[in-house]
Image 1 (tube, rainbow, N blue to C red):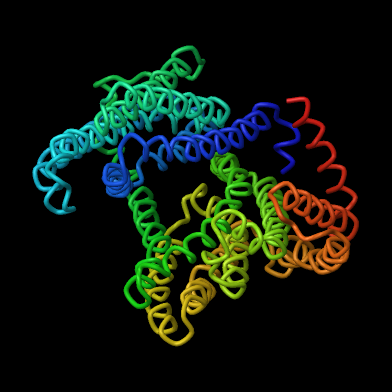
Image 2: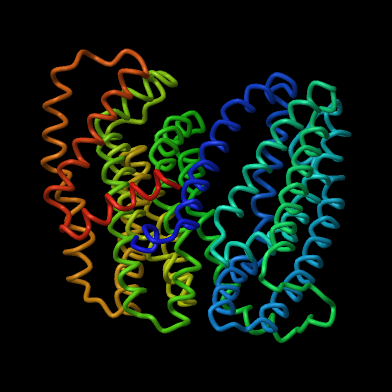
Length: 508
């Protein structure tokens, strides 16, 4: 975390990253009822299905856009301008070919998609056109992603995420406008394409007026570049597939064995627990290119210090949020969607525990990706996904919804957990004992007295009947944890670093 406190550009990037999350959340909350109003339940369902399909088409970059970040960071450190131009030019051509294939496939599938999903004759013509437009949007996103990840590799997260905020705003404004003009599904797809074009133009403008010396030319295209970066990118591609499989397999198991009605309460608790993970994953996102550059330069001490600090602060954030979820999660869901949609404290506790492990794994995964050591991570995630399904199916019929959560947690503990625990320690030359004693135990042990104090304080308050009262309780929990952690879980150097970071972030 020291690199945050000393670099205003990265601090600004962190703020912009959090702002991007806020804008995305507000856009989702506000736009959803508007889409339902103008598209109707059937039309909205069509748009949701298309979005799910395209989330897999996005993986058609085969991990190359993530590879761009890693290799841009390397070339920047080594001052290999010609190699960087060859990587960008070749990747851009490859993305163009992949984008063309995506459009061609979507055009062909558009004639069958209405029958496959039982789309009514009234919606069918618009749905076919919208499906092709959404495919074209994916193709444009693949091309634009090359330049966005180029900026990411240069650690210009402020420009990268700031441009994405503009994309969200353009998409929102045009979607609402096109819906009012009566364009329906086609209008929503056109708005999405317009947002992608806008963000790509911003990427290009930023690169054009930078001093990076980037040139995309046919003369720089070199097929040997693909052979160089393909092993890393394919492992990243498999990781992306595995993560999607992990995220969606629980709902499928519940739907098959318990019925789709019980998917809703599980999904609500899952989302409530998962959304706060973006608070700490944003820090690992910022650190990813820095991991690559430090490893390339051979600055192992700085790499180790950065990893340990990010690992600790990530666990601090999730432990604080986890306490709040344990105290207030049931009440929040009751006020939000009704008590009948609460999956039970057992599921809530298990998913909070799962996200504690997620906080441990996120910085580790970013490090392994950044230094190009993601082979073991890939295989562990494949094992995690398969074991998760097997255990969830075995347990769901015996203990219901908690069985699915237990299966997910145990599968992680038996596979990926050991990789994200041991491998980063090996590559950063730090003992597992030091990692556990300095990064894991202080945040977790601080939660015990903090939880007892927060529980005692909240007992004196009346029952929470609205969101404002819940927010007050949330502030009590988080501030109590922060105070206890600063006293018992940090060193003097860390406290000075946190105060310096807060000051710098405020000034930024």
